[in-house]
Amino acid sequence: MQEINVEEMLIKGYGNLIDVRSPSEFARDTIPGAVNIPLFSDAERAQVGIKYKQEGQAAAQWLGMQIVSPKMEMLMQTIRERELEAGEPPTIFCWRGGMRSRAMATFATFAGIPVRRLIGGYRAYRQHVVQTIEPFELKVPLILLHGLTGVGKTELLRRLEAKGLPVLDLERMAGHRGSVFGHIGKGRPANQKMFDARLFETLQKYKDAPFFFMEAESKRIGNAIVPAFLYELKSDSIHLDITAPLEVRVQRLYDEYIVPFSWRPDFRKNTMDAFQKIARRIPTEQAHLLRQALETGDYKTAIASLLVHYYDPRYTHKQGSDGYTGDFYEVDATRLEDAEADIIKFVEQRFPNGLHVIQ
Image (cartoon, rainbow, N blue to C red; front, top):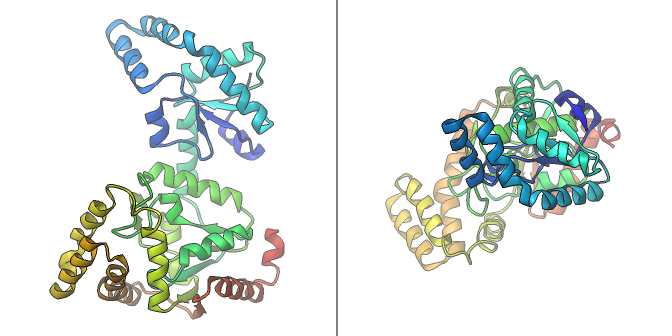
């Protein structure tokens, strides 16, 4: 068994991460890219915790041994499969590099499986992320994508990232689209710890990038706060104003929000609950018509009404009050393929050696 610290893991690029904490701990926060092979289930972990409080450490360890022994062969088989699939030794970690990761790594070593164990566990990783993110200074320009809701900013970021360009997709990191309807279809939004970890990993991946693409976001996205070093740079960034006709925007939002999720039993309730939060900010007559459209499932009409009477006015007001400086370069995104090509051409002209450095 090889023991490594966080810095060594990051510098050497070790992957194949195995989080052996309970499923609920893993769901709350983990190292991005890790898989969960829990030593204890949530219920088993609770049992051991109660035993520890009532009878002490020795009794808790004995109970843990009794719980784990019957499933140890299955756990080792799963770890072996991960090792073979990834082609490198797994890096095993728990909360603070204690009994759980030590037990799993020890059994794996006895079983002939090469493994690494992360010293300090997830706690050490989190401390490293915080110590890096809080004082971080971005020394390269941000290329900010602006535009009304539905113009395709998120899809353009995905396309640019697929081309190998450096992208900070904050909405994906937050597991939220940044609006009152932004949670629909996304599951549970990320907490601040997971958001920070995903941002940290992206900055590590593109540490030599000459610029970053990012959508112009609010300071809060879902449950996450955008760090100051990004939010405060937006005024001095390069600005791309993404545009598209209303009917194109409506169709894109329909395809993103409605088509994949409208079959779910709770979909209509979720949309109505979200609407209730903003209904008072929409003119009374329009709010009444919008409610009717949602209740009858006329979602394209509802989307168009939301854009015209809620999102577009709020965006226009926000743009006027955010204090952006510098020129805005318009990009027509009626066809995303054309917009993608125009943005890449813009980058090639603005950063002649930029794409070469990335590639």
